[in-house]
Amino acid sequence: MEGINLSAMPPRKGTDTVGWPSAQRSGSSGMKIKGQVAPWDGSGDPTAEGCRDLLLTRSRQEVDVAEGDRVCVVDDRSPIGLVTITATHYDQGSYGELDANLTVWNLRLDH
Image 1 (cartoon, helix red, strand yellow):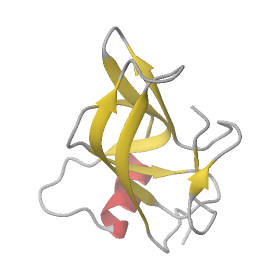
Image 2: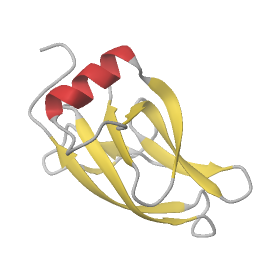
Image 3: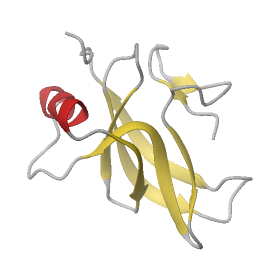
Image 4: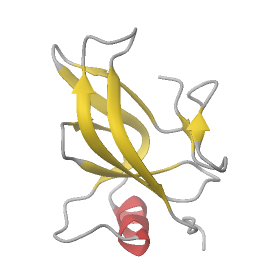
């Protein structure tokens, strides 16, 4: 729930959720990612430019996720990132937990 600070190098857990992508429980057994997010639904490997286009045209405030999902993420000032969900843990911690791989590209929404 604390979010991921994508601007830090390396990215690190945030101290609050103000604008940073974060995870929490969804419904009775699912998980979601909140923030400025867009699910990667294209074929092939995600790219920085592909994620940028999705975030500019189909951004949401939250998206339900499951193992194997890929989600493009960004905050107002950060580089664009991609979260690849490797496992979900609904019953862990106060808000549930995700295991994921994070890729952060040197590309921002405004460039």
